[in-house]
Image 1 (tube, rainbow, N blue to C red):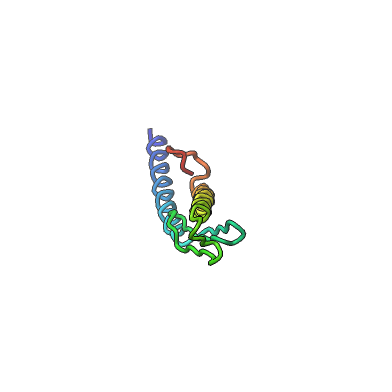
Image 2 (image 1 turned 90 degrees about the vertical axis):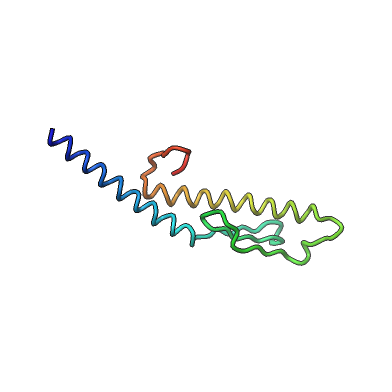
Length: 108
């Protein structure tokens, strides 16, 4: 019986440590960014680990008042690519803490 209690305490201790480590990683991810450039540099975007756009640059020659759809497509592509890169960054960072446990919701 003592063995089970000790095992349970050990598991709880590990779970608390993992929770603390995950919180630290989440704070770090707010500061980490990914960069994407599309259309030969026409649109450049920086996104953080929380999927917030922190910078967006549009080259002057990418702005065509007669054909705004081109710029719309470039921005959409940049946002989607940055989102994928941010997801990969988060996945990699969190799996360092969880050891690839495959937590619910497909995260980590």
